[in-house]
Length: 335
Image 1 (cartoon, rainbow, N blue to C red):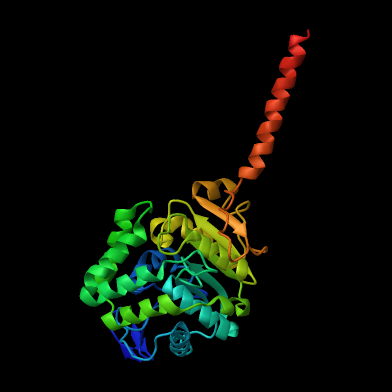
Image 2 (cartoon, rainbow, N blue to C red):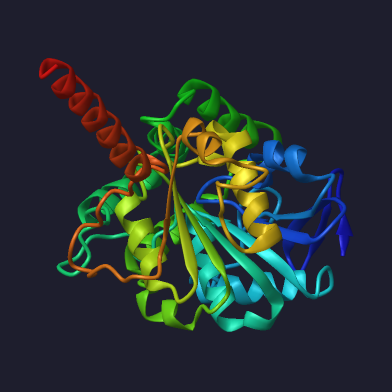
């Protein structure tokens, strides 16, 4: 263990621990670092112990060649967390979500609940996977990374917030995380892109038995909501939430709403907007569309958009009121 100004380094990974309560491990996405979680840590630190980790080559974690795949990084993460926590919930964002999936499949006894934000089991599109980015686009990004990695990261941050509520504020928070905590090593960024271009975790999903919450942004340009929805329907025990007017970082653009959904799931393992602390009306005002994932959608067909909470219940009632008014008018005309 090596101490630093804000946290400590264990097994080559930098870790920050804040708060008191049940343990929640936070894994950031490609190119970012632990500072991306500062807002969420502020929201939860009085009720949870937050364990934020810099992925290899990101922030203050050094880059070690040969640890490129999600499985290899998941094992490194396990070695890092073992002295800190014997059992924890795990939240992974984007690339961090892929590592979280591998860890949950390999170490089910360690993980209480799993939360996947803007996560896809396969990043690239294919004949049987219409939800991904074209391989040519990732190859172009890898070329740009070699030529000017700082500009490539800036462009990627801009893409993350496109279509998001409060986009300028969100991208400023992401840029601030890099400026105060350090940019990722170019080698780590290149390895991360290679992972996104080549990994396919769909065969791993049936082995992830941990209760899971999948959160997607309605306007995500990086991880299509359809990918997250199919991920949720494929996992054995998962729930799906889509946040309206959110993009790739809903925990920043919708921090309060995200925190409510997250905490309710971590506490109970379920999402019920009909009871406290979130009512059905609150769910709608937060811009949430909630769906259970007990039925499996065909992997070759685009996922259907979720039905907004409360819509199917209100329409029949409205029709009944209209019919009642029509009957009254008809009786009056015959008098």
